[in-house]
Image 1 (cartoon, one colour):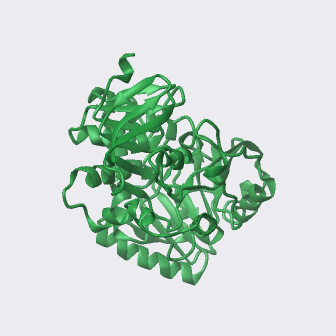
Image 2 (cartoon, rainbow, N blue to C red):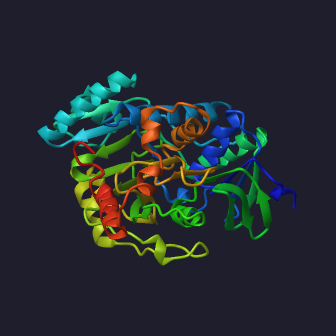
Image 3 (tube, one colour):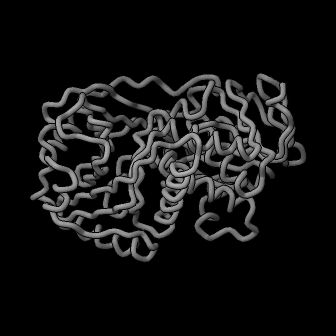
Length: 409
C-alpha cells in the first residue's frame, strides 16, 4: 500500500496536535513523514469536541509566546491556505469579579507587555459596547486582548493536513497502530493493521491514547483524560459571529459566539477522570452522559453577565476527554530511554489553541542542539526518571483541571 511506505518520521495521531507537528516538521525541512490515524479523517475525536477559543493571555512569558506563535500560524493559514481553519480574530474580554482577580490581571498585563502581546484594561461601558447585552457594571477589571479569537477545530486539523501534504507529508487514515519495534534502545519501525513502516522516529500525539502508545516502548507516563463539557444554545437575538470571546475566571466560565448562538463552558470544581490503564488501544474512554447539574450551573453563573442566557434553550452538548498532567505542563520531546521516541501529549486543554506552538516546541526539541530551558522542562524524562504513583498523578491532574482559572494558575 503506497500510504505505508517507509518513512523517516511516523506521527501517531491525527488530531490538531499530530497534524500541527507533521506540518511544523515539514516546514522545518523534515518532509519524509507519515501520519497514522485510526479514524477516517483528521480531527475526528478530541479535537472535534474542542470549543475552539484561542487565548494568549497567560501568567508566564513562555506560555504567552507559545500562544502568540499559534495565533500567527492561524492567521497565516486563514490568509493563504487552500483549506482554512475558519479563524476569526475577534478579540477577547477577560472579566474580573473580585479585587484579587483584578490584581492578577495587572500581573498578566505586565507579562503580556514583556512578551510583546498587546492588551489593555478597559471599562465596563467599552466592554458592553463590544458585546451588546452584556452587563458588566459589577466588574472589578476587564482585560481586552484584540488579537485573540476563535476557530473551528476540525477545520484547523484539515488545514494543517492540506498544507502538510503540499510539503510531502503522507497520511494513512483509517489505520491502527498495533506495535512499535525497537532495537538496542532505539525505534526501528511502527506496526499497523495495514503493514509495517520502518522509521527512525515516532512522535506520539495520540491524545487520550498517548499513554497506550508510550507503553508500547515501555514508558509509563501520567497522561490523564479528564471530562470536559460545554453547551451551545439555540439562536439568540443580537448574537453574531464577530462578537469577542469572553472569560469570567472567578466563575470558571468561558465562551464565544457560535454563529448566532452562544457557546458556554466552564471548569468543574469536582472533576471526573479516566484511567487510561482501564481501556485498551482498540477501545475508548468511558462514554460521557450530559451532566445537567453542572451545565445548569454554568448557565446560572453566567446569567448576571448576560441575562438572555437564563432563558436560552440548549441546542447541543459537547463533551470529551482532554488529557492533563500532574504538573499542568505539556509532555514534549524525546525520551532518554528510547532513542527516536518523541512525545507530543498531555496538552492540558491547549491541544487545539496551542497546537501550532506545540508543533514549534516539538521541532525545537528534535532539531535544535540546544533547546530553551522551557522546552527542556517539558521532557518526558521528568516522569520516567522519577518515582510517582498513578493514584496521586490522577488526583493531581484532576486538580490542574479543577483549578484551571485559579489565580496564579
